[in-house]
Amino acid sequence: MKIALGSDHGGFKMKEEVASLLASLEHAVSDVGCFSKDSVDYPEVAQQVCSLVREGTAQCGILICGTGIGMSIAANRQRDIRAALCHEAYTARMSREHNNANVLCLGGRVLGIEVAFDIIRVWLTTSFAGGRHQRRLDMLS
Image (tube, rainbow, N blue to C red; front, top):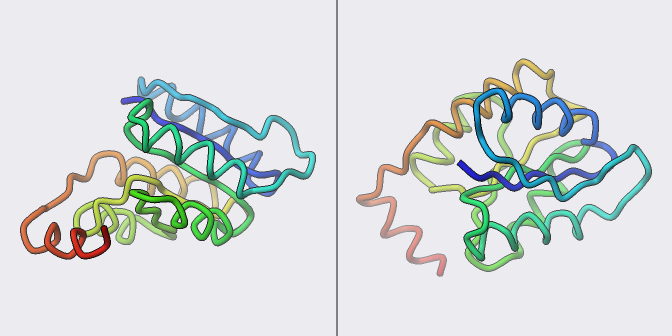
């Protein structure tokens, strides 16, 4: 799967570890930055990841900032993006199964790396249930 990946400075360390995990799972990663711990503006990174998802260059995206909140807000301002801020495997599964989330947001300063890896594995392997959930998603368009 092709995954767009991005972070701000607060999520940089976790993004680097997530990129390694995704490569080990044989996913193709398009890393849009940031590329150091220097301060950057998270809305710009979110927009880049969301653009790759919206245009179909990437099948989904993962965004990481300090808490995940800023990235979630920025991503959800983009048309056709359903970004989910997840804190454990259950919310990851439900964000895909019920909401067909196409961008996962994580907090690099609030999650341990093993919890983040668990969230990512569940999120990437859970399918959208459709049915009544599709009707509700259609109301958002």
